[in-house]
Image 1 (cartoon, rainbow, N blue to C red):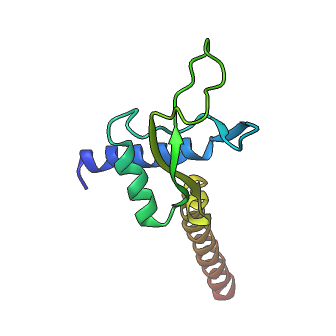
Image 2: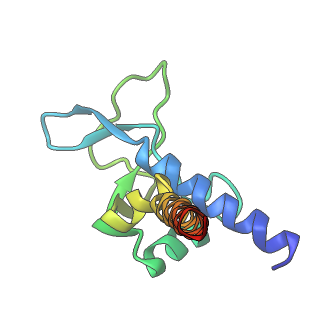
Image 3: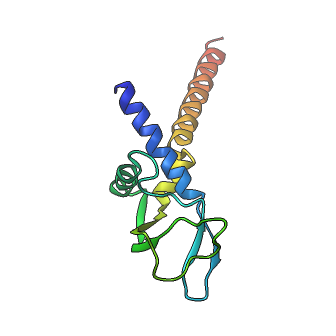
Length: 132
């Protein structure tokens, strides 16, 4: 694995964590959602590719497709309906995505290694005790 691959994987996991931080701040009367901390495709280089990679790996799934998106101007207030600048899918995390964020596999492997070391130490202790 090259340094570029490691950086790319870190970037993909960072996008996944940013996706987990999204929250609906307000539901407008016409049913539109104002999402706080939204992950915007195209905001950073390769965000779209990172989201598609997460989707391919089963970490996220599209909740809605072709959702109208628009950046809010703090001075302008709530945007009018039908003035969206672009459309993009809205993603939700799967159980596998949460496992990646919480590093469940790393904890599981670490626990198994510690249990194996403990078992070996116990067996060695019993062999030494019986040999005396």
